[in-house]
Length: 392
Length: 153
Image 1 (tube, chains in turn cyan, red):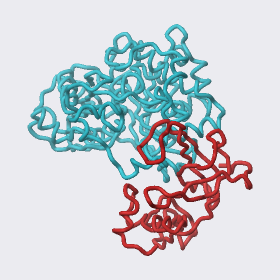
Image 2 (cartoon, rainbow over the protein chains, first blue to last red):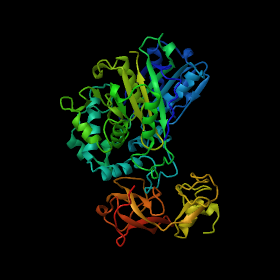
Image 3 (tube, helix red, strand yellow):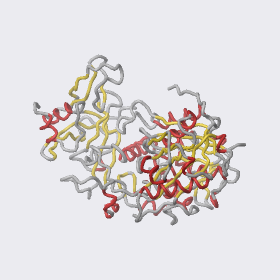
Image 4 (cartoon, rainbow over the protein chains, first blue to last red):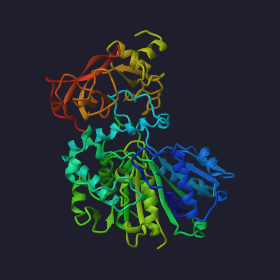
């Protein structure tokens, strides 16, 4: 595999501001559009901008860019797009659009919403039933398409490496302990290993606490040229490298192995295109839509070898705060991740990375954080990543 | 089986039927498991597709496989989509089986006639057929005779 190192956009595009509505793990009496709009307004105000300054709109699938533009009264845009989640995809589109000149100020958003495909209780709200995702394989239990694919490869992980479910549980506990310091998080009650092991099994070997928590809420970002971001109120967060990664057989059942999927492509691409990697990382954001994804990201990023992530978490566990601090310093998903802040499909990871580098992360703040790595998404067709930094 | 596309759709509601996959489901009606194979280079590929991913030949022939293989991934559903005959009170096994025809060539289904504790990665299985909603569906049974070491990956 040869990955290009060409990266003419390196540090030339920046995130000027990020904002969240916070997340709620119950059906709120609000629309998905309302969350996207609220987060977008907050991000634009933080950047000192108005609707008229925006000429690009990039978001996940709902609301669509035209609906978001109309809701906020954005007078004219020269670029808009709705790439699929996870959320680094939206950042990549924004970097491409801003660097090429398709637009100058991109408003980038994601609204999480509890829907019948991710929580059965969403059926109780008739306005949410219309959002039910169907898909040809949806009613066929003998498929590993979609979410069951991660459980399937979790079974392989245990088979090949001889780990235990406690390895998965450490990911959930780390997230929960971090979420307890995050007022935006949906799940803030303490979590023990006994709680984890007693949780309801959904698809063995994964239980409810291995799977992200469906929430209502939204995140938004202002992405513009680094030059322009320097004139805005907040510390610009420079996008050093951003990438997507996929291999030739990306489907869940045909993925060659835990050692050969999209994550390895992402890591090689970020290391080739960017200027730093884990030795200079102050805060790390591996995706955690399923706990197994986090373990594999930690291994593929090079923090430890294949199958060693559980032991790595134990070695770097900070008993005082009941979470991971790599080398006593670098937290993993300090906002609580998808398992405890809420299932934001990566937008929460990116937002917290921005806030950590801007020094506005409150009691979660990593002192002196200058460099962050976000590795979003899973194994198959959705592995992505970004390296972010501020000026030294 | 020689039936029209309309009839085929009616026999397999909810399945991903299109021009590339129809031959597979016609095979199911005859209890024959077909996997796409390239006539030019001999590579098998899954899922069914219009072009060989190895050599780009479009001379693709849905070809019968033996139906023998090794369990590569194994999960047990404690809940799942509503299907007649599955209540999930006993967790329902779903396996991905690596077929003997080619490394990394895999098929997803369930295992019938076995206790869940015996459905483990590395176990040899063979194809069998059950009926669902009035149409045949391929499943696996543990191959008690040919049980052997896992295929290396």
